[in-house]
Image 1 (cartoon, rainbow, N blue to C red):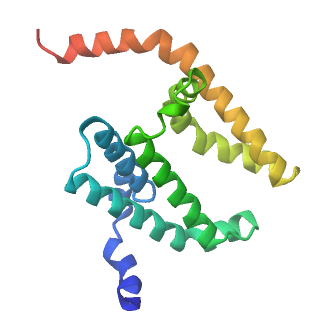
Image 2 (cartoon, one colour; image 1 turned 90 degrees about the vertical axis):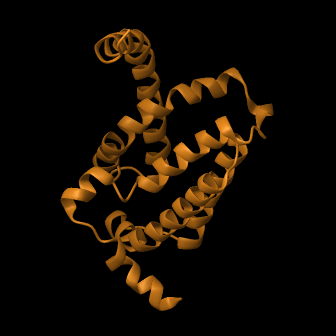
Length: 182
């Protein structure tokens, strides 16, 4: 098994021009999210289950490969078992959500969190990293993290209410008119 792990980077190595479009470092999360949506809509099947398992394994592999780089960059020790545990927690959480096993927490507050997901996805990485780089050296990371999380969630909610709600239906109508024949 150890020899297989050593060969994986060569096996999955792809040119930058291709990687730019395929996003190999984040693709397991996109794939898992799509699969969890399919599970929610259509139920479990072998293909979806296989894709979720493969995406989990690949995400865990990426964490193991990148943990040293993260530790060096952020001058902090990242614990691989803890990191894999957090990854596992979210895969289990999304499995339960997909199977509608957490309907007891289906409250209006949760809907507010749900509408933030797409704007948060679009904004969090670049703006979040910029905030960490700007204030992370001057303020404790234990204070910086909740500040950045609250700022990013607030910005995502603002984008949802001021942009998505106002322009989403208009954009959908225009695109449907342009690309769907009546």
